[in-house]
Length: 497
Image (tube, rainbow, N blue to C red; front, side, top):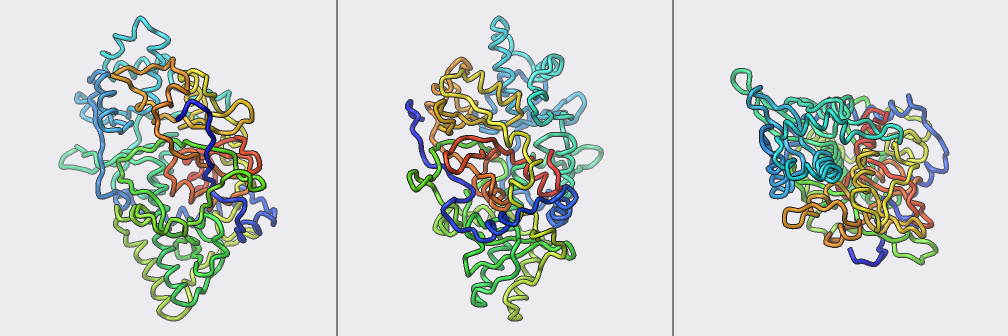
């Protein structure tokens, strides 16, 4: 990023200047669902994930780094640098089992520990991973500050599942143990297990989005072939903005009766990523549109139809599971029969909502621990202060804001740490400006409190980020942020972390 605080366009989940008919009408309805009603609306998503297994979502290419707990910490940093994979599975040869995961939290804690214990810094690099974990546990390093309202930290060092475990059960285990990753193991002869993959919450959200978009594509084709016929409103992912007004789009809602799923709108859009890729935070920003005085990027899926790295190129990494294939077959059969679309409508309706995706974010105030708490650093603060903020608040990234008006000028994330190495040296005493100087500009991905959960879900899937920042639509000022784990737990279980 340049030394001056140059402002660039925000990339919102929905654009204030568009007419998202369904979202607007639902917002005007003013209906705030209860916890029980949210759980009812979320049930079809849960049913869908019960029919998808870990094996279904494994990409054609997966890569997992496994480290011996007796290896020195220097090896862990080298492995992270060379592979760009921040999370490594730990193997204990004496116990002959996987015993934990080394994550970005560990890397940050190690650097902050060296800063606060300068005399031990040289020796720390030679510590074994096992010894580091003992020090970390004894001193309580990296634990979120619950007094700040942060989500709880991990309750278990490692959470595992089998390859035939449903994605619903995977999310349930991750939520119960307050972890963001789960290790998929396959049984071998005897009592041994082989490590197949390490999956995180974001990858499951990505997979869910890809499956929905595939279904939407099939339904959309039927809708166009039938003259643009459209089924009921509601639906699932993907209709960034303006979905209700596009005549060729067909909304497919999720049915609690048949366990079928749904989407609304959606076309090609998303960058290709295999199961082993890492994701940073977010970066690059400027105030939102206010009386047309500031640039604002639209979020129509149609705007990205010519993007060679679209959502369906991402989908090529997956084989459609039988369950999803059967839904698409039903869609094609319905189209061939001349029914004008897929007659899969939700049997459950709560107020004006036929899907959890219909609910505006502002009507579910219990999603997001930091939705009304701006967490940010400034360009002149020390990098160590920004890293500490992330640990204390248990966030994947934080905004870097201009002091004068609270608008976001950049983002610093946990994944940025590995890019800040200079000839083997990590300097946490750099200012945030200096630390981000060599970082390639990304984009700041934001949302508004009035956005529907569908728009936010679409943004998470398409942009492949772990945090979205909530901003004021008129001023661009940071209001809060939302983590992908908090969001997907609500979509699936009707409750947050």
